Figure 1 (cartoon, rainbow, N blue to C red):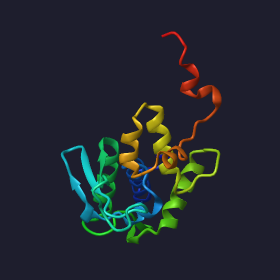
Figure 2 (figure 1 turned 60 degrees about the vertical axis):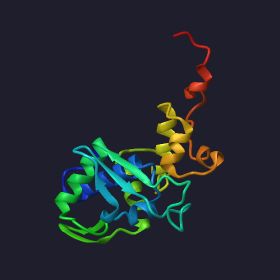
Figure 3 (figure 1 turned 90 degrees about the vertical axis):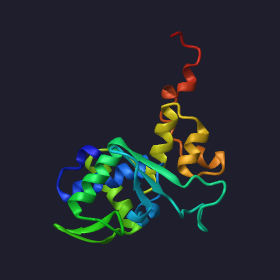
Figure 4 (figure 1 turned 180 degrees about the vertical axis):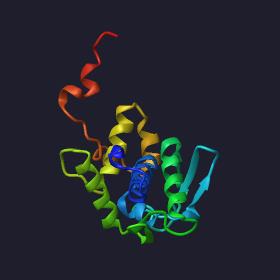
Length: 185
């Protein structure tokens, strides 16, 4: 999907949006649409911390059991920085509507979902893609790379294991790593 994003303003925005939404823990489309620069702080040349003050599961704000600081590092940080610089965004909403080369107001959650769908289609991906694909993709990729479930849950803000497991896309049965536990190394 990232390969479909060129260096024009729209491509820069979409790449930054996809990277931010994925890398910060599979953000919901409403969380991406609500992302604001006041909650973003630089942590060195290759990264940011995004403070997720409110989410579907944290509607009243940060609690003692929440992990509101979400890293946006390396490739995702570079994409975000390129978009913000090209768009001249220094305050307010991070992801905005575009009218040709003019930067407008914040994207709606529906627009975030439409961007994900459009980029998946441009990439030739089969299936039903939408706003929750960033969340499902994050959980699936983190699991396939062996990231521990508590670390995944800290990023996604899931409180119940059953909820986070529901986002995991196992793929075909033969690709399941649990099917190969008795293989020789």
